[in-house]
Image (tube, rainbow, N blue to C red; front, side, top):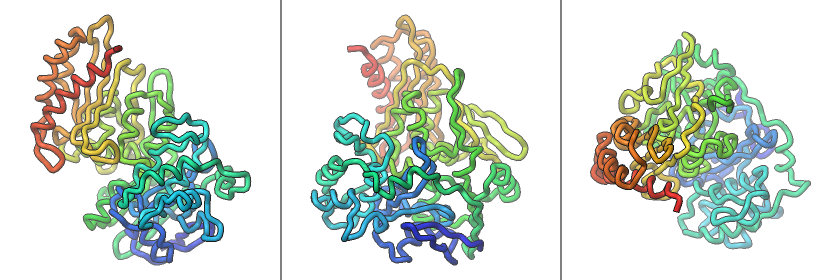
Length: 473
């Protein structure tokens, strides 16, 4: 094993001889940093939240809150981490800790360190104070979505919100605020071995593709929000894990006159902030996609790479007529997303290929919407997800693209519904007639999230909701 190390609370610390699949959470706790807790081991509770120094969008470094339970410690080689213990001390509390304490934001205390780290990431977010106050933002610009991935089992959310809304801005002498003006740690080549397997972080796309050519059985990871669950809950132990989240070639972002190009290794938070509302349909998806903690790690390529039929992004990207650029040592090829999924968690992507770029053609359809039917408003898996993109001119539907998730073994286009809409007047009569067609799209099944009949009913109701929601009343 190479000499892996990271900086924890300002101290350079060797990772040591630990199993390859050791999570960052377990590693930190084994070293006495027990503020972070394991509540769910799958990224839903936020008790394990820590801060990682990552390249910023508006500043050289941004403190980013992530789920330590999902990240293998090897993925943090060369990086910089702050835990709740590193933010302040009992004698000198951090402003976030101070506000939580004086406003009664901690009850049993189990979740508090996770809340502290997630809240601190929002405290240091560039431009926060300029955000307007509304029902989900305080007068100080604090975005409550920053805490959407943190659960309080004592149901003490009001004082936690009060603490968040009472925060001021970092002072000139704030060490963590000053750190943001310096570059973030660069990605380093990492090789780690144990009896469990091997973890490799290549530094170039070509090196990553060479690994996949030689080892098509390798598990590719970026944010580890899916693989981390497989490791923690189902005991998965891939023989080779290849990390690609910091490859420059997979982090493209470009908006031109004819298309939007999104690198596969960009996190959903990065895409949301860089797009800044320029793709309205995606702007509707992001707040409903899991939680901020997950979006800080999850990548757009990872969401598509799993081939899941219930991912939130595929229905929206199908409606946007997106294509994927697949790369291997044999070259690159472009695949329309509508042709990408072939079966349950199966795609046309070969074992030696990586998703390099997601391409969204411009101009965008003028009328779009995203509907997610789930048991909870936020931080939940959808029972049904629908993405709409319609072009309506002079009261006639000129073009229609509708993406569906959760109603078949793969995400799919609602082809029959699209055909029934195109050329028809955009009226209540048309929509009610076509809603019956949409209710028969896909092959929905019964499971613990919803029955097949419920899913079918939601498809038809969704089209009606889209119509009435789009009326200029």
